[in-house]
Each structure stands twice: as C-alpha cells, then as structure tokens.
Length: 230
Image (cartoon, rainbow, N blue to C red; front, side, top):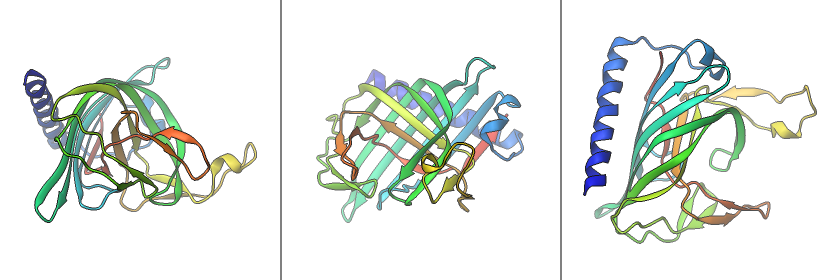
C-alpha cells in the first residue's frame, strides 16, 4: 500500500509540474544535438499504443541533461491498459526514478513499422512496476512474438527498466549498419512526430527471426503529445 501511494504521489507531482511548464514554456523543435543548448526535457505521451491494438497509454517523464562528460538522468511514470468486450482486461503501472541517459544515437529495427529508427535516446535504470492479477497469454507482441505478459499478482516489484525516446522520429528503410563508413541511407521522418517507449525487463526471452535469443522490453509506446526543451 505504501509503494502504491508513493507511485501515485510521484505521478501526480510530475504531471502537475509538466502542465505548469507546458503553459509557461513555448514549444521548440526537438533534436538530439540540441542537448548542449537545453538543461531539461519534459514529455508526455497519451493515447493508443503503437504496438498493440486495444491498449491505451499514459507516459509522463523528464530528462535532466548533463554536461560534456555526462549525458543526463531521467524519470518516468507510465500506465498501460488493455481492453476487451467486457472492459479492462489487463493493466500495468510503473516508475523509473533515477534512470541514466546512456546514448542518444542508438538505432534498431522495428518489426511493427518495418524500418530502422535512428538517433534514438536510451535510458537505463532500476524501477518498480505492478500489474493486475491477470493471466494474459498468447499475446502477439511487437508484431513478432507470442508471449505471456508479466503478472505481479497486484504487487509492486523491482526490475531493470529501459526507455527509448525518438525526439526527431527519424528512420531509414535500409539498415544503416550495412553501409560502409562515411555512407548512409536516406533518412525519413514520421509525420506523427516523436515517440517514447517505457518498458520493464522482466525475464521474457524470445527468439528473433535471425535466431538470436533476446530479452524483450515490455511496456507502453506512444507518440508524444507534449515535448518541451527548457
């Protein structure tokens, strides 16, 4: 109960501070190379999940950028719900308090959109999360994998977490890693804008089509509804 109250208070404080800053601060164009001009980033993503039909998300967070020798730290609170014909089927809520921004130029292949996202920011850390006591089996996740969603039996548990942010929504249709040094594929931008993924690493191992065993990040991903650099 205490952990639940802490999470609710933290989420409320972040939400209130974000709303205040959103009112007082003008919107600017986001780009990872602008980090030397700004000290803090506030963001919110509210709406449908980009990977799973029938799921809705709320992701609220902030990043405090470091100096020349450090990228920065991050906090995020997220809430995801699945629905079926009878109503709410499954829900997950989590919080990453002191994540470390470790990279701003990561790229990876997305099996949902079938493209390589580039200039992705990566945050890692230890957080807590809770799910409803629901067995959610045989779910097609990330458009590739059949998994069973985590079930914490309604209790908060600690786990490693990660967060991917794409402030510029840049992507390539070809693998950037397949090009020789100094050459790059053509870069495109999502019309919908940037997005954020907040996920837990809870021991769900899957095999990729390339035959690799990887731990699958589980959590909500949505387009930014607010993104502010300060």
